Image (cartoon, rainbow over all chains, first blue to last red):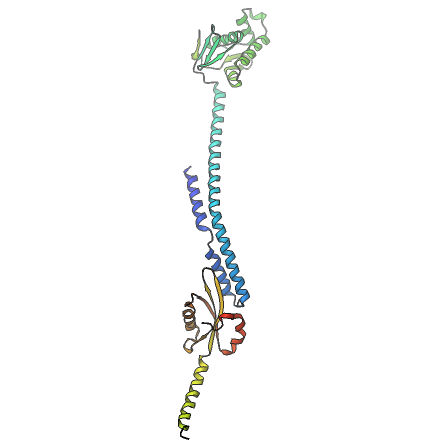
Length: 212
Length: 98
């Protein structure tokens, strides 16, 4: 940040000091006049004077553009700084997102209230259907026991039927319905995690679960 | 014949003065400038015999044109009256002005 301001100041000083003044043009014209012995006729001298005048006019125009150039430079620098800041934010966010995806959602507390049919996730109130609540409760209890439920087991726990009578598809459907009810892709994908070949689990710290 | 000696004196004086006058016919052409706005001119100037060498000519010319605000840029050359005719057109209003 300081470097950028320093560069800006340096460029401003350079801009204001290195512009050609009218004298530079006049000095050049004088030199041409002196060095060329055959520039003596009045017409030629008049042309040299006109040359000097046009140089002066150019220098004046340039100095009036100086301010414009400086303002544009400031704008460009501000844009640069803003772009840098946004880039840094973007990178940080990406990193944090990757972190969240790896670590699962940071759940400080998960309160499942069966009677009210509500779930309080980090004090965020989520309202669920009865079926979704049952599925979530089953997963929560399994999590507290460090268990992973497959589709068959989930179906068995909820319906009370023996595992032999249940099929994987029914369990998978319950999970899908729970995720749909939770809505918000991020939450449902991270909260109800699919473990390959083994089943489903709640991706949270088991100590934060409270069932009432 | 009463006037003869006086006449002789006068004639001698003239005879002596003539070479002096011929020596005073030294001219120089120069280039000068004035600032703000830039003005340039090429001029011819008559010099006294003492200033007929390149060193003194510069100082003499600079002094004389400086009265009008002109700055001498360079002395191009020193010549006698025979070179006046060809330079008159170029010098224009600065021919033997200062």
